[in-house]
Length: 212
Image (cartoon, rainbow, N blue to C red; front, side, top):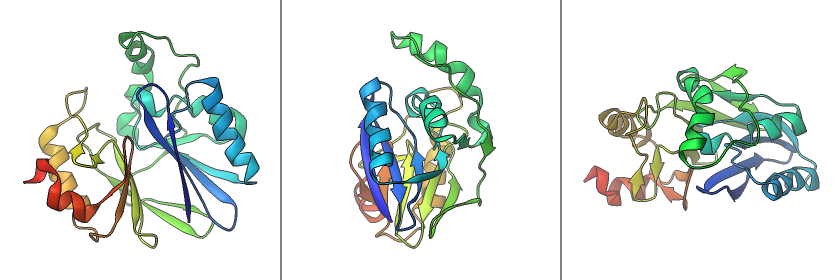
């Protein structure tokens, strides 16, 4: 499986394109806000002759869904996410104004709900859906057992965890679910987070200050 990471928007967010030899692909958290960012994402998909099978959101906070309308329009694919985060779609315009800007496009509704234990397929790859609430009620992680990697959104970062002070967040719940759902996975599992550099489960178990 090939993994392409883009860093988009003012926050900034990691957007991932996953694909393999079949040319089937998924896009995780399209954060493209500016027109040039949208073009960069489109060019990568086009230049590699990829067919986008899924648009996946780890959660529905503002910065992770900027590019959903663009991806839906360009690739005729609707977003998939956990239902518990659906209320954030209505909150997005208000949240943007709190940060001092207006959304260029109205957020689009979730068309496909993903729940704990679901499996997303594309090409020769499987992504297991793991529900890890705490940063947001509907935060989910996409885990590829064969490739020993996961896409953690804002649940787990290198040396940190997601903030839990936004609506629906819960610090204790986040800590408990990271320990019970993620830290039980093989230590060599690479963690590709929603912000910042990648890490591993083993490194976070050993060095993350939230778990000492």
